Length: 171
Image (tube, rainbow, N blue to C red; front, side, top):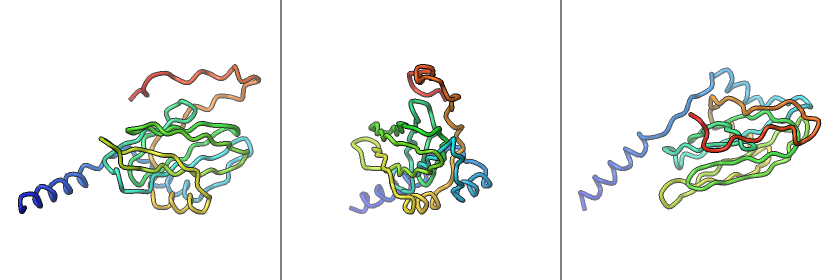
């Protein structure tokens, strides 16, 4: 029995020390994002946050309309400026979760990237949350350094948009 306790403690220490990391944005950017600035009318803001410690050793890929939009770990968030309209957010872990959102001009949207227990790895879910809950969640997190997804110029027709890249995101 004593051996099982030691193995359990060692596993717990390794789990905590094996927390994943991603490049983080400068502190000034983090602080500015946490003021929740109102976007101009030709844009909207989508905050995606992961304020849980569960699954801390797991990185989760984010995509916006098929384009890479960052990689999150525990207690991180990203701010995506988007054109108004319909968008699809994708989170990838052991499973793939998608959430369709409509971004109104000048709107700010908050999405919680939930972490769940999986069979082999952590699973993910995306949940639209209220501005109050979203702001509170973002304030618990740090901003990742992720390049914003491409924002093509406004097309005159939907067919002019470039197709999303295929295959896995490049490192």
